[in-house]
Image (cartoon, rainbow, N blue to C red):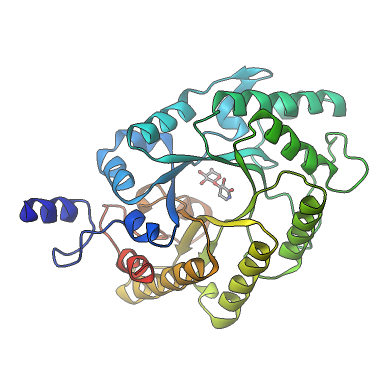
Length: 343
Ligand code: XIL
């Protein structure tokens, strides 16, 4: 039996026989932390992938399948096929589903852009989207990114179809359009936990200051925002004392005002996969996990688990190898580094 288990875990790429057959999710549970991974629907036919996810994680997030372009084909034309496949996989394996994302200005659907909708039509579309999607996934999706990447690096709200082109009736306070989205989402599924998700806001900086101000305002006015998702797409520049300390301080301030804090898209891209570089990568994973534990991060979610499906090589020039398992499902030093941080 022991031998069988050891063999099974070896096959899953957990590590050497001597290392304890412990999964990331079991290790994280000791800290009341959940561990998630992004899942692209295409990977569900790949059995090493599904085994790895079902062994090590307890949360999955569709990588693109719950974005507007993943869910719609046209005005009031929804297609839940791909998202439902991921939800079914999750249910079969007793994993929770994190929804991503009701609204995002990037990758807009063609029908939405070409429709030239005016503000009141767009408001109707947005509300209908929230009602339909949250209605469809009610009881199946525990938490949602309602809005993704709405702030720019100067703390400004970025131009978007939802904000100002033409925008969904943004009047009064400057977060009016965002406030609407969260209120609609809460009405549509009062049990869903609602997050704001962004990148380059991991440290205390102008962007995270703007998010912090919004969170404070929403808390004061009882707008249903429950937490913040920090994407955490890192490179080795982040592996220094100053950014890491700032990251920790930032998490702490959001938590202190009552926000649930989550790491939602962690990956650590590197310029080559030499053993030296893989060690440095493991070191950053370790430090990030230590900070997450110390600050009470409720979910650490990786933007995938194997390099086989990672968005990094197709997005960042000359960078890759960003995830803990390589493209042949072999664990890199990062796997053990994460486990060590969760001890
Ligand atoms: C990325 C996906 O990984 C890619 O497959 C897709 O082509 C573009 O989007 N921030 C986010 C994620 O919030 O939704 C993005 O995902 C990565 C950056």
